[in-house]
Image 1 (cartoon, chains in turn cyan, orange):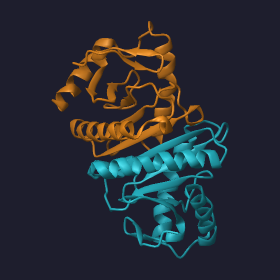
Image 2 (cartoon, rainbow over the protein chains, first blue to last red):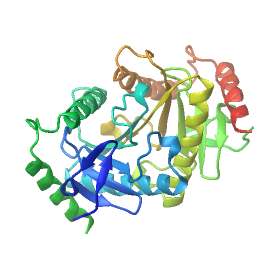
Image 3 (cartoon, each protein chain N blue to C red):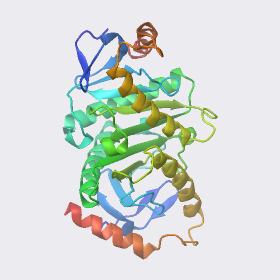
Image 4 (cartoon, rainbow over the protein chains, first blue to last red):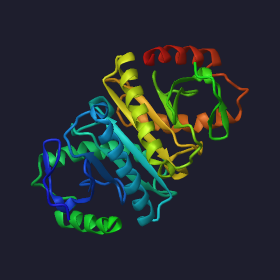
Length: 157
Length: 157
């Protein structure tokens, strides 16, 4: 299990929620997943905008996203992936730290495909609110998230 | 101006619509843009899924996306960017050739941020239909697209 401190903007992320790491990036399970396997990948360095990533960080985070996407698509018996970066507040970014949303997609998971994005956007707003009031964990318990991360971690051994 | 043949899935792309190229990727203006500056970046090699890109192609396309995004955000006086890959048919991909959607975003460009995705998804469906019936170019003329590409090309001299 990753043991170092991970931060997501101003928030500290418990290493138990992190399931894949590289030298410059980490992948974590999501407090507010839209569908099973909806995870986030961040650069370790706190960088607000995508354009601010170095070339090394850009390669590292997208190789990580490719690997994580491929494994989670398979794990969840999905057949496609949605990759999205809401890069800046006017694009729906709520936590000022670059993060790639990855979602394994299946036929019929949403009535219309575009509904997945409404959900990503809504959940990103809720994520920020939830991280702000971290006490109030009605939706997903830490234990549930740690179990999910534990399962995913096995995919990258 | 780029002079080599560019293809997007089964479709031939006129070089006049291409405004930025690298050794492994090219950026083109969009037949069905959702908002001004909505462009597509593709690997030159026809690859259906993101996971099929080589490490070199992955780095190349995302460095290109970073550069194009940064320049078009500035050019359009925007303040954020949306980056999205609909990777596979169940994620809304209509043309089986990896492509990154890049959209410069501004405050108030959509009533709710998530509406931008409904539009991307809808326009991607229309793009495919339009490429299929290429004669019928009611919406954007080739000349209009070539002019837009010409403007953008100047940003990368």
